[in-house]
Amino acid sequence: MEKIDVREDCLEISGLSHFSLRKIFDCGQCFRFETSERRDPWGDELWEGVAFGKYIAFSQPDETCLRIFHATSEEYQQIWRSFLALDTDYAEIEQRLLAAKGKNALPIEALEAGRGIRILRQDPWETLCSFILSQNNNIPRIKKIIASLCRIAGEPIAGGYYRFPSAKKICHLGIDGLEPIRAGFRSAYLLDAAQKVTQGIVNLESLYQMPLDQAVESLENIRGVGKKVAMCTLLFGFQRLDAFPVDVWVKRVLEKYYSDGLDWSAFGGYAGVAQQFLFYYERWGVPS
DNA sequence: GTCCAGGATCGGA
DNA sequence: TCCGATCATGGA
Image 1 (cartoon, rainbow, N blue to C red):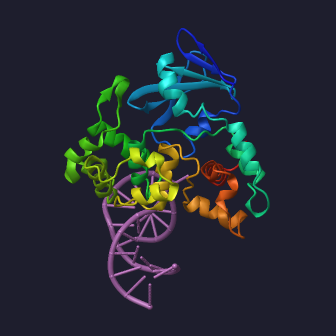
Image 2: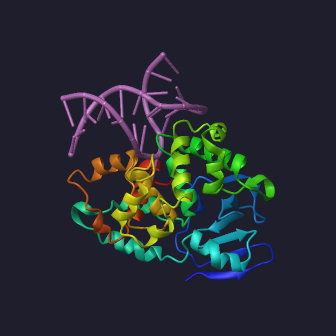
């Protein structure tokens, strides 16, 4: 179990099993964290970004230990432990994924490639917007568009960072106000989402207690939200580990390893984690 | 110039 | 139900 050490300049979480910041922030679930030339006081790589309206930085000396900067232990309990899914037992999930046999078995290489990933628990509204903007787009440009959206509409916080704008704020911008983010046809989709959320036509809070297919259907009422975007929103923003987005990369995996078809229910409620491991494996291959 | 990117929508078979 | 064209933008 993890142990929390409140140090002078950071919180140190130890006793983790197979935790990888690089995989977590490099697996296409989150677009607001980057490494820079800056290092932490011990010389380790620093991941900086904004989540839940707060600037935050993480580093890790090894796969069992995590350091959190600029956060109190109260914030750790209230936000970051949940954000990083440290309240979730991934050793247990791995066992459940291994339990899928036969034509539904998860390739062992995919499991090893993805080990260390955590499905983040991000803000639902920000996650919805991020994946609306992700459609038919590439990751570097998705990051640029989101950064630009935050810059023109989000409240500034320390160090040149900005909060993600509220739905109401995006409504006020309107379609013309969104032009500077250069999101193309996706801007109209973003605006529709903002309008439907502020008007209560789509109630994000209510999605938590819905069955998966019903929650997907509800999100599909927003223009520009299809099954894939809805599944990403539920998986990364609502910690719905049973949600499994199927994009071009996962389709490739399905053709390669599951030509007989795949029953996602074989992963015991963790189809989303399995999907993420498969995505990471196909997209980046085995770690060197 | 062409192709592609964590897709969705539309019209027409 | 399924297919293809189209959507806006920028980087390779």
